[in-house]
Image 1 (tube, protein in one colour):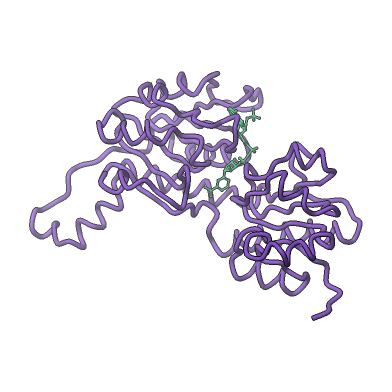
Image 2 (cartoon, protein in one colour):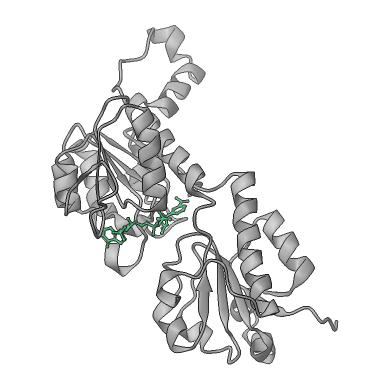
Length: 318
Ligand code: NAP
């Protein structure tokens, strides 16, 4: 069917709103590079933009197959799956959707802190399984308000988490690549030092090579048997084997995880543990926020095709 809608390559399935919008404006080649490489080769030169979610894998080899590719629009703030160095080499701009998801991800971080310390999922099970009636009140749990929180990554979302923690009267400290002189929180140069001084260690850095395995066995040991790990960043930031070991041996008190290394595959070892809450990467997964993310990604695409400046180019491609 002939159409004058611009061709875009979709590299990940999209939620219904984003998919409907993009279908109405573009000719969408939905993962054709994987499902039908021959058909893809036939249209590759027409494709000037790639669209994908935050987990999208866009390696150099894929970008190099589209000689007129000029843009990768990520519907998400993290873009660790996109080879930005290759994009720069090939003259391709990468955009993402910062800020519009800060509230949701920060809300979820607090939710996971409450789940970990107050054991809310276990309490729900306690009622459903009739244990309340059979055994009486559930065991007492840990208080969250007033506990010390350490935030690994004090960027847009880290600051939004800090705002919520302040309302919980929590002393706040953090680590990042650099100290923030405008923030009234305690800075530690390493995650290990930070972990040694807090009750909750909340991880919210980007993924990718620079942060891979940053939360390792040493950091978990520093967090200690009364400390909780919350990861709403990327699974790769935490050494998953070390974390399972720490949870199994109760060398940390518990964890709340929204992300996993190798997701959606989650190591079965986690399923046997009752000191961890497991979520299927739902940090930004509300209707309002996913719409805002899609709208920002679509605005970047529309500006690109109209020859206007892109709104939210990732720092590496500015
Ligand atoms: P951001 O504003 O860029 O903040 C990132 C923070 O991480 C900054 O404070 C930065 O330090 C710090 N950082 C970066 N590399 C580091 C390193 N090697 N060592 C220590 N700290 C490092 O990003 P954001 O908007 O807050 O988003 C953060 C990440 O959250 C995203 O990249 C994504 O992976 C994740 N995320 C997850 C979900 C979810 O669904 N669970 C949703 C959205 C985002 P400086 O300030 O010193 O540069």
